[in-house]
Amino acid sequence: MKHALKDKTVVVIGGSSGMGLAVAKKSLLSGARVVIASRSRDKLKAAAAQIGGDVHWQVADTTDEASVSDLFERLGAVDHLVIPGSSVKTGTLRDMPLAEGLYTMQSKFWGPYLCAKYARINPEGSITLFSGILSRRPGRNDTVLASVNAAVEAMGRALAKDLAPVRVNVISPGMTAGTGAYLKMPESAREEMFTAIARRLPAGRVGRPEDIADAALMLMANGFITGIVLDVDGGGLIA
Ligand SMILES: NC(=O)c1ccc[n+]([C@@H]2O[C@H](COP(=O)([O-])OP(=O)(O)OC[C@H]3O[C@@H](n4cnc5c(N)ncnc54)[C@H](OP(=O)(O)O)[C@@H]3O)[C@@H](O)[C@H]2O)c1
Image (tube, rainbow, N blue to C red; front, side, top):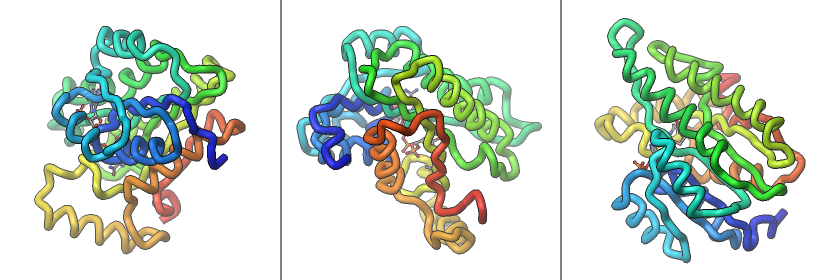
């Protein structure tokens, strides 16, 4: 499996931050041709500079069907598509406007759906979707995100049949530091939250983007895994 990604094309939607950035870095180190895509040109440029090697970038917004279809038209056939890119809104059942729930579904479910619809993946290639631990361990005020994550997991299983022999899998991350997810929180509150969660987890720490990237590279490389949800959560589901 060591050279499985050599000279393969890996496209990372959401490759400018967090888990996607880590997937892009590790794929490049494994000898892949890497394309990162997201909405912000500035973020993509900064990420490409940080990655350092011969990484390509494309502006694309998965909430816009024309943008997704243009992206894959430009890219042509690719080997692996990894889709951590999404943005979500959270809030209480009573107070969150429906439009924000619909936005979350649009970004995290229909975005990857459109990518699967328009991407041309070579037969030995794969798609990796991203859900999250909340699908099966929701906390309070997680109704929308828990439901969207569960929908992504169901989509992964169904696409694995529709797109076979292309393999389709889902990574369900647990709480992961070093991503864009918690940047709106004050730093001290964020670190306190990570410490409190780490105490409860069997792994004794929260995730790092590299943990998730290692799982994504394994799913791309292993030709006999399809239709699964891989929990990369430090034991969060059993905690
Ligand atoms: N971090 C966690 O603790 C955690 C836990 C469970 C599940 N997850 C899931 O894991 C995945 C990755 O999370 P992360 O925390 O690594 O994310 P992140 O650091 O916030 O990065 C999100 C990436 O997606 C891009 N993006 C957002 N909306 C997009 C759109 N409509 N079209 C194209 N690109 C878009 C962003 O760039 P632009 O702003 O330039 O578009 C950015 O590159 C997400 O699906 C997230 O829900 C995360």
